[in-house]
Image 1 (cartoon, one colour):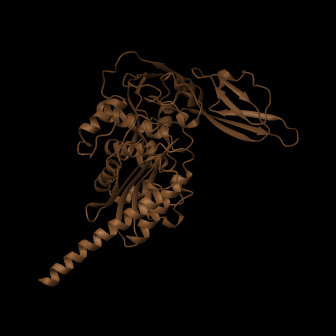
Image 2 (image 1 turned 60 degrees about the horizontal axis):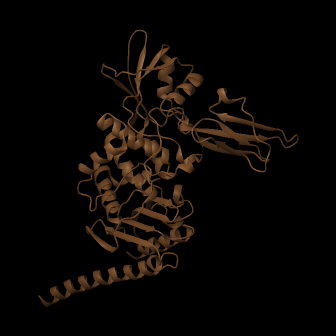
Image 3 (image 1 turned 180 degrees about the horizontal axis):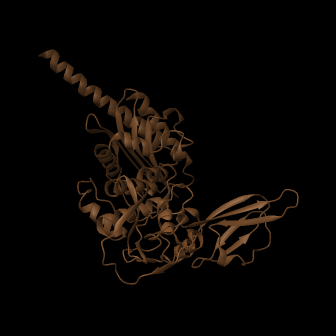
Amino acid sequence: MKNVFGFIGLLVFSSCSLNQKIAKVAKREIVNDSVLIPAHVGIAVYDTEAGKYLYQYQGNKYFVPASNTKLFSLYAGIKYLGDSIPGLKYYETADTLYIQPTGDPSLLHPDFTSQRVADFLKSKNKPIVINEMNWKEEPWGYGWAWDDYNDDYMAERSPLPVYGNTIRWLQAVDKQTKQVTIRSTPFLKWQQNKPTEAAGNKFLVKRKRDENYFQITTGTENAAQEVPFVTNGIETAKLFLSDSLKLNLSSSLSAFNHPLFTIHSIPADSLYKLMMYRSDNFFAEQTLLMAANEKLGIMNDEAMIAYLKKNDLKDIPQQPKWVDGSGLSRYNLFTPQSFVWLLNKMKNEFGLARMEALLPTGGLGTLSNLYAEEKGFIFAKTGTLSNNTSLSGYLITKKNKLLIFSLQAGNFQGSAAPVRLAYERFIKYLRSNY
């Protein structure tokens, strides 16, 4: 009996010793890092086999998670969209095709060679009537920075996205003649006669904030730039679809009173993987809106978030303030414990293998410059807004333990690079020593 108690005591001591070692390393590498001493820091590390936290530091405090928010949008998409993205809802009569948008971001998007919805629309060879009464949202999210409107990461949300709701501008400069050629995809036929500004050193396209008028400064080198266009609901999409697919489009102001069929566009995971690997804001926003449309019949973030919080997320440790799909808004507030809880829930509901396939690993995606030695052992989502940096995901240790972690830091000054390196040092320690 004495030996049994001695063995139990050894286990308890070993566990305490391990926790103390992790705490020491966390404080040295993250909490007391010179960049983070004046900042707000949260850490949560969970052992899935033991079913308990190995270490926490302010794990129940709220942080601005930036693109870690996409993990919650990913959950909504996987839970409610099925294996394939609903590309369009429709019914047809002998002489007319009636369609209702679903928010599918893949239509005419250059990342997707398969265009089942476009092929379907072209094949009908009849007038098309669009009803967008299920759209109950604004082009920009709550709390987005309005002056980022010209940047490619802030494409507008819309019920019927086309071309990713951005225009891809290309400048080609002939090396001998120095002649400059500028083209766009999609082609702006109704804007082709707009003058360009005088040549400068750098190619630059600047859109007026509230209209699709683009001012172009030519440069001296081959260059490219993506600029969001003003969607105006479905109006800009109608112009592009009419031009690109030669469709006869009009809008309906009254609801359809017929059962609607669904045509699916692409495998859902092909969208989610791009969304997570490059932290695509537009895909994340549209994913949350599509989930809302499927579950609630309308595209509205607030309604879908309220539903998720009341149902799927009712047991989350701390209820988040969640306002958009991408994490562009600084109004989002989540805790490290909540990310650990969600990642554990996703592992249990959807399987670890699927999560590993969707999240970037070392040396790839948003982890391309980090965790090279941990490739195939870390699967995580980054998040960055100025003065805020997050990392949440799964880690397989050298002892084959599966850990779930969330590292959050906010209100630091300067670049996020040293914070990412501090995270990396801590993760490397966990991988090697647990």
